[in-house]
Length: 580
Image (spheres, rainbow, N blue to C red):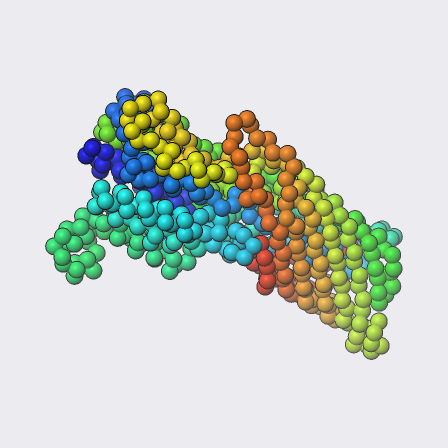
């Protein structure tokens, strides 16, 4: 029985079952570089080029006994790691008020270029939470209890094991996702007698990454420094000399990059491959067609048609980061394979296979959170708009009131359904994971039964970290936007105060292409929730009339002050336009 608790077996099992939560929620950091060993090019090449054909040195009954009797893995697999699997809500750059039609030009044609920067510092994972704990079950009491029980079982057999999930996992709960967009908006207007046509199309670079504060990074670094002791620290602990623990030694500076000093910089290759998603291309095209119903000097009213054409297309993905489109399970992965490799003395192959499995799971998470369309996906939007403008002289008959006016615009669009790839998790039956379902006596006596139970655990572990991906007909619903501008204009100078409201309804699904043999799924966790934003902004512009044209330069900025289901972003736009 002592072989059941061989140190190598326990370590490799725990590294792939217990610590996957840490791997799957790794955050970028200037000082924290736990990824250095995980992103070894030699190991990656070895894993790619090696066919794992191991001679079975440990039988299935032994593996199942370790997983069930020692670590209580079925109790852990009873709970889904993913609480939600939908892509995060976002507002397209074409909905920034700075790019809406103005309709106050003196000439009939206008061409403009707007250079913009947009940033969401913390995207929302759910209606009111911007921490990853609401998307992944890192801190739910049931999961923490199960992980704690597993750790106690392992520690009882292996006292040197000092990882406490109750302490480590909550440190990752506030990991956030940031998004930045920078680019140029091409937009133009053409005025007819009673009709105005407006088109705008963005060319942009979009980047998303994981984010943690300095204090959060420091807490994680300290926690892993206690787990991953250097030789110097271990020797000093044995000698009970705390003073030496306060002094850095040579070994400390090179231990898996945890010190993050100048001699051990951040592993940018790991960050680019697993923690950053980016793309360069064009976004959706927005077309406004307005008809004048009332057109007076001090008041006008127009109704129109609005469409969003799904032209969003990435010319290139992975300029700095990755696209995560090819995240997949490592070939030949199984728990028994890792154990066989470890016991046969092939530690490099066992470590490489375990690392590939953990990093693949991280890439699956990044595919959901970081790999985003440059627009509203492949959905055509059709809708109506309402626009009104009134000068203050309509109410106050004074010369100064002529310089003040208010303009409002409302847009409502229905986005047609289209097929997308969505992730799903199993709707688990707790009775399938009871320890009583694993008859240890029969496992020791019946190799076929033991292999069945081992295959069950292995498959459920894979499904836990690699959600099902199926082609799904998605109905995005309705997007509504209302924008009000308050103007003050004097000669060529114009200043505006902008108040904007944006909202979208909850998604719904049509057909899901589920192959036969798939277990029951939790469909609701794959649907984006409803979302809304309130923002306030300002706009200042100066016009320079010429003989045959008028040139205008402007600066616009806004910030979201209240939102639900979507992050609070801000925009900065510098615009140059020519009216001719």
